[in-house]
Image 1 (cartoon, rainbow, N blue to C red):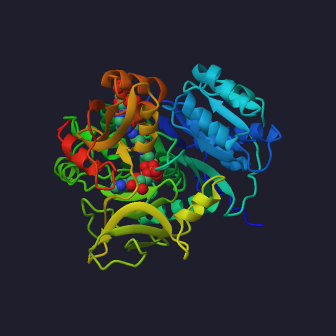
Image 2: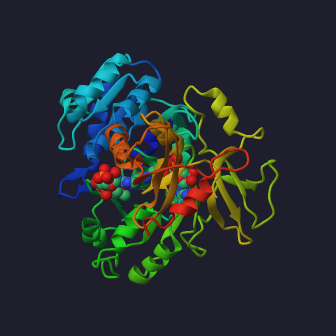
Image 3: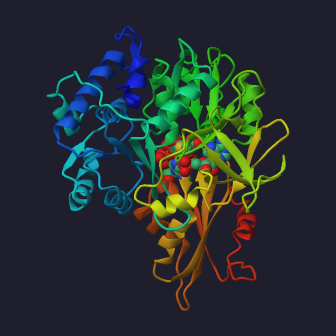
Length: 506
Ligand code: MCA
Ligand code: AMP
């Protein structure tokens, strides 16, 4: 029987000589392909020794490290479901994810073990391990006693490989279920589309709890048997220092903005580079042009989602990379732009983006109604993004029908933040909007109405949010006002607020 386990495909792309370097860290540690093979086998054996049920979720909130990546590979390899969680999430957020996903295993940093394990045990999780970014923790201690040989679990294309939580415009986060087939098809398409070739070296400096760093980055390098230069965090100086040893770089627009702020970024530093890829948020044409001038390279912008991995890309070769556009639908992806009645709009006109393809997810975890709502009768997924396709076929994202702020590549849902603020004493109502920001692209601003007789303080509201919410979600400013702009139906006009506050960080 053919094994459709994604790990099997990644493993088969490892070079014949397993002693070659697979990963070099920013501090000079070297990992061979054999280390990845043995390490993932040992952790997979540990997971399998726990007697977990079929489809068990392995929830992971740990700092970025090669071992964290090995844990991801081991989870695939053992046939379980990987559930990565942003390290910025605090206890209420983790409580929700663990309660909703009911993971059989939770892996957290030793610093967070006290509160995370309490939440996990309360939710019925039996196994809580620690993993730190200095190669310590109970996960590795236990795995050290396991065999470094392991037969990859047999999986079918539709079997679940990962759940990625993505917030909703209303209510709580939804877990997007991605299968082995979803992820493998996307990795294979991108390998060809972006011209991955022998000798490529990827600088990996993105978080590995989202699609960009976890799938596009890691799968991209591994399925090509390519070495990664693994930085413990994004540090523009370090990236520039490593550029001459690399050929491919991936980043959200904020990373490009921060690199451009470094005088050391020049053509000489980029002399061996083949490709710079950007995505997760709109890349300003200004950044695109400045990058061309400074480095001689044209950034390739692409577009994707947690529910679908990558959907479109500017061409690597055989066509122009156009700034401000996200290129064409990837091979195998069908993308259409429709009006609110679901009818295709004429070329160049704006409408709702819908997609179909082997990369489109299996549905939202335990939310069949929500899943059904997001698909059309003929099986297209409603992305919630608004865009257009020009006469040459280039797709441009012009906005979103979903109320979402993308800040430094992280998604922030105003509804969640407004819900939090509205529960604070003295607050009658609030509205959170995204405004332009030179570093993060967009950041949240909160506008609050006080309850009669109360006088809530903007700074205090921000402090309350910082204590309870992931830091990137916290609006950078909070204004207490007497009135919110409303339309005739009484609905808050967020466009008016966006206009009013757009110059705040200019
Ligand atoms: C950090 N801060 C932020 C953000 N990051 N504020 C708003 N938006 C952010 N993204 C704030 C913190 O709250 C803190 O504020 C201060 O900045 C310093 O925090 P620190 O963690 O030290 O920041 P940093 O290390 O400078 O991080 C900035 C960053 C990071 C490197 C740009 O945000 C990042 O790695 N972003 C990439 C996200 C990503 O990979 N997205 C891909 C999603 P205070 O001190 O006031 O608390 S995948 C996706 O979207 C789809 C599928 C796709 O197409 O790829
Ligand atoms: P996520 O929920 O983290 O998967 O974020 C997916 C959303 O990010 C998409 O629905 C888009 O709104 C946005 N996005 C991703 N790539 C781009 C891009 N290149 N340009 C504009 N928006 C993007």
